[in-house]
Image 1 (cartoon, helix red, strand yellow):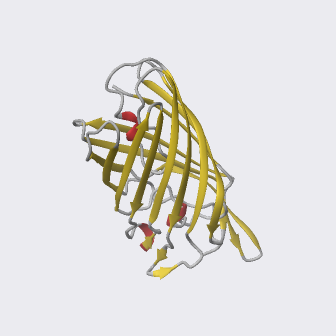
Image 2 (cartoon, helix red, strand yellow):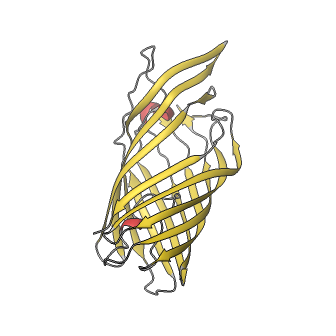
Image 3 (cartoon, helix red, strand yellow):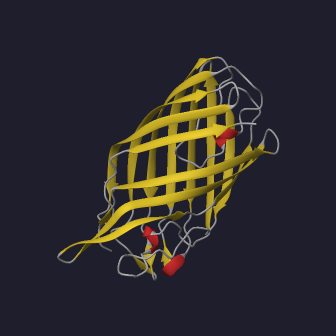
Length: 263
């Protein structure tokens, strides 16, 4: 596997969550993926593969709260990534791009995780983690398993109850099911320390020794909660440590923006 790079990766997502009751919430997320100016190392130079964009794989999740206490919350998460994304994008030479460069993977991937929260006045401490098992997808490729986890501390300014903040370690849904009643507008300031590990991929049964890696980052941010139920947040994730194998470039930063509405 040759090393590759892009100018930037853009991932946009449309998500919806529905709370059956206080304990059980279902959510779905449809992503859009764009890799700008994809290029790959080749003998004697760099091969430019162009920009790749398309619909990604849908994630379906269920979250079940195991606690009722206002002083501590704990939930388990389970779900499945569906092979709905595009896997047949072509390069400038007309050849099909490798699966890791496609918007979709072609695989059915189980997801499990857990989250916890503990409010203390206007401060809230949260922790979450998700593990995704990768199965064989398009072009006989099995992308590496993925583990994401982190802890966050938030502070609320203004009126309204403290709710769970969106975590960048798991899929959307937590921030959408906490607005059962109207409240006054408020601001949240938060900081998250998180990490991600990605295993090696297999192509045709052979392990790509140069794939995968791990990194950790810190992400400060703010969120505005409107009295009408709308919310908007922004944060910047900056790497504090990373060890990524040679087939992938190091991360410089992540800019994360979200807009949501609770009913």
